[in-house]
Image 1 (cartoon, rainbow, N blue to C red):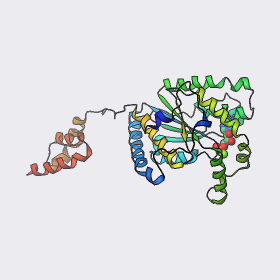
Image 2 (cartoon, rainbow, N blue to C red):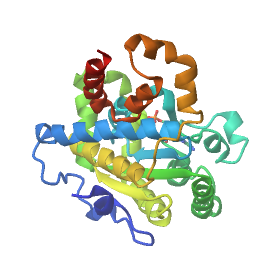
Image 3 (cartoon, rainbow, N blue to C red):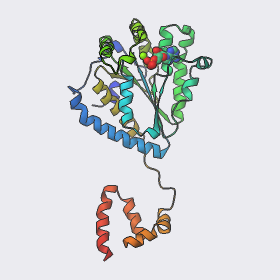
Image 4 (cartoon, protein in one colour):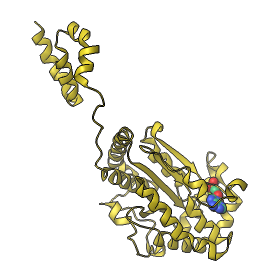
Amino acid sequence: MNYANQFRIKTGNKADLGKIDADYHGDFDNEESTIDELNKYSKRLSDLQSLMYAENKNSLLIVLQAMDAGGKDGTIRHVMEALNPQGCNVVGFKVPTAEELAHDYLWRIHKMTPRNGHITVFNRSHYEDVLVVRVHDLVPKDVWSKRYNEINAFERGLANSGTTIVKFFLHIDKEEQLKRFRDRLDEADKQWKISDTDYEEREFWDDYQQAYVDAISKCSFNYAPWYVIPSNRKWFRNLAVSQILVETMEGWKMKYPAPSVDLAMIKQKYHAEVAEQLGVAAEELIVQEEQPKEKRGKKKGKKKKKKK
Ligand code: AMP
Ligand code: MG
């Protein structure tokens, strides 16, 4: 199944969250049945990141949004596990500070976007400025209602500069949220997450859903698509997100940069002595290195024979 096609909100379509089954889990029955595929995507993600880092051309911005207990933290843990920390980071956006509020709402966002070759995950984002801000009237309607176009223009600019933006709404239903809140009460390692605010915000569930429907429907484009991921099942959510990330990065058709130096000259200059000791010509060492890693060993064997 291609989850990118399945869960992507097509430009101009309404993301009718009420009609999207948060419990959906495809052909999989349980976590166990996803493990092989999940491992495959994690490995691929790791390889693609390495390539991306080396190429130093594309950058990837992953935006995560969800209702409280929707699984942002779990998704981040899962995705980041596959990545080299050197080329990625996570930025969480909380209630804006006084300094941040003294600027336009994109100010704190723009400076955290990824540089070439890097992946940045936004745990919440500029979308809060048309979500919580809208639900609680933190600015007047004529201010937040203009932000959809502003956000589209901002993301378009990022995309034009080589940043691919992928936005995930982790869709859980209201019962699942309460269940997760309830589970936190009994789990020592989760109790710290419990807050009165989460329960209070739950009262605004419908307003949030409506705000999400509008944000997702108005701001999904080829250059920065929204994906609504059925997320009641954490393992299915991880699988779908991983597959979409792999597909996105594979679309870049990356390749390792050609060496910036003359390999033959380097070998001759710095490795001739070693080659001498091994009893092979320096150029032959080059031939070996140009082959895929798995074949190099075999060649070495042959060379040993030659030595006599
Ligand atoms: P958490 O992600 O649970 O640590 O909570 C962060 C809190 O910051 C959430 O309640 C968000 O709604 C809130 N928040 C994030 N961005 C904004 C924003 N731009 N304006 C107001 N509140 C925000
Ligand atoms: Mg919270």
